[in-house]
Length: 337
Image (tube, rainbow, N blue to C red; front, side, top):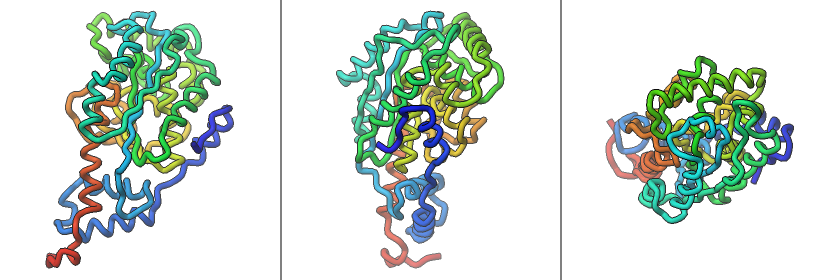
């Protein structure tokens, strides 16, 4: 563990001093790509991804021997406002399903050879309803961030992040509105399957909440007032991964929105993150447009729980295997054009 979130000052130090990728390793990987037995650029984005991972792993030939998926779960007081098609009890029930191996993410991580850990954060103590008060105190937020940071295994060489939490698309929408501006309707979608009336109610709740907390000036305060424990844990894991030079593969709307408070405090935080897919949630598509992030897949997914990240991971593995395992023209005795 590298980052300490014992107080706000430690957070501010961590978000201010972000390590950069290893340019020497990236240059070597780029040179290697030009020598492999294929036309230059013929593998498109796979080449870019391999070079990117080389930079964060600090070696010309990166490897993915210990991919780690972390799913954080939390409950939200704002669920009392009728913003979800499911009750809060479903969060704990789904955590039980994860533990029993019965969820989509279990099958996807098994298929991809990905280690999976599920971390539940005080499910019996939901955050406060942020329509009328801060969801969490700053200390509660930092504690959840520390949980996220501490959950990363020592040997992880890439980190996949997902979540579970009834009403957390409402939290994600409120965070996105507070961080990126616009109107509440821009950031609100069906979540777990709301009808038109439910979506309109959700828009009202997000608009009311961000208006009520309109004096928030930095990312940490936004995360505290409008977030949830699982969103804070994702933010802490992303910041810890950056300081350990571990590349991150984010899932969909909630996991991407969880990083926006960090992005508000330092936009460079996204440099070590890839977006696994373009969620059907309209708010996610707006985040991608605002930040310029390009997703790897576009399959109409909106499940959450890390499912998009686990689905995209084989593409990342393919990029690394091709880059590190292919022969160069010289090694293969093939004449270059």
